Length: 142
View 1 (spheres, helix red, strand yellow):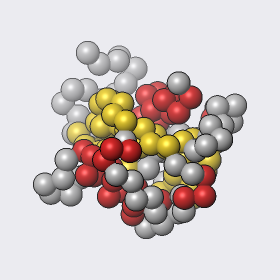
View 2 (view 1 turned 135 degrees about the vertical axis):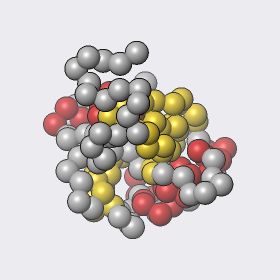
View 3 (view 1 turned 30 degrees about the horizontal axis):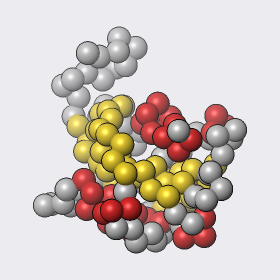
C-alpha cells in the first residue's frame, strides 16, 4: 500500500541495495556521505552480478569504509523500502544488517566524501536519506 503523500508508487523503478547499521563501542552510529550527495546514509550499495545481500554489504563496507567483516559478524535486520535519496523517481529496497566495530576501524574510502559518527542526541541535526531516517538509524540504539 502506498502513502498518498509519497509520489512513488509500486510501479516506481527499484534500486536494490544492501546496507549496514554500523555502531561502535561508544554507542555511536556511523553514517556516510557519498561524493556528490547532500545527505548521509548507512554504508552499503548495489550488488555486483551473482552477489547475495551479505556478500554485497561485506564488499561495500570494505570498499567504502575499510572494514573487513565476516558473514558471522553481521546481524540481519530485515528488508526495508523507501524513496531513493540519490535517484529521483526510484524506490530503494535494502537488505539491512547490524555490525559493531571499533571506532578507529572506519575510514572514508572509494566514493565516500565524508563519514560521521553520531549519537542519538545528534541524529535529528544530521541530513539523512529517507531510508536511513525512517527505517535504519533507529537500529543503532535499540
